[in-house]
Image (cartoon, rainbow, N blue to C red; front, side):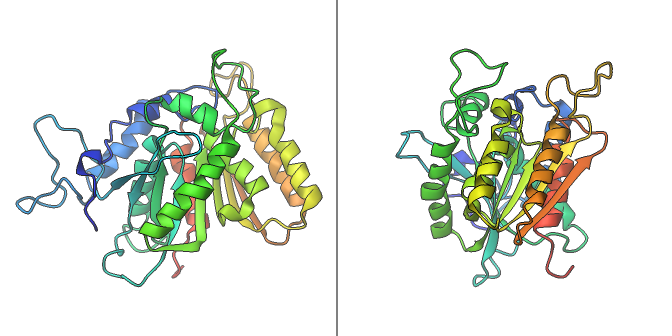
Length: 335
């Protein structure tokens, strides 16, 4: 595994921004147990840049230094169109150094402060007793530098300026199209240039607003990625604007070439009187309605699976959803 070019930019697992992100307008804080999943896996992780020749590979720096996610590197990939600075977090698969001729699928994940370390550890643990998922290059998409996760994702992940009822009056929404162009024109070429990627197998992962962004990409530029892992997508946004986008796509296209995995928690549905259930949005119904619409088109090349995960809500469902999605989109070749 290569050492990071920017050792002082290694990814810190405090996940401070992540606690403020990933709510779809439902909430913006993750329970401590979910964040802890990212931390637990690191106890077993093999080390990266923090290691020295005198210590085992898993050794962390002491003296109050930040805890680091092992075997990762950070690259600056600014957006010249918006003038914003972004970064990508990169984790290479275990065999990357020993198979110099091999090219790997690439999984791009939104809300990277949360999702990047979590997906990294899920993939490692799944293959702990033999190959379950194919090895892949993992790329985390950061929030804009100097912004909170809430601020970045509200702007970059939403398709229209309508906003959400709980957003401040001065909140900026509706620049998903510009962010999609940034991914297409800057991030994807950068990763393809610097890493051994299989460009025919780019995949996208997003939860909540990230899933909304992924749905927009799927329905406007589906070949940007070959696979989509869309978790609890905020399809309620702007009076179900994605339903209108889906109808427009179907009216002008005869096929949708993509593998799509969607998940949503059982409790992401309004049921008055039961505190386990959502208070505002019927996200299970929204997801099922999108599934129904897509299946009704009979797109020959579309492969679609939808899981409603029992005993999960919007803030707890992601780890299971990520796991099921990886198994569906990236099954190990030997399986």
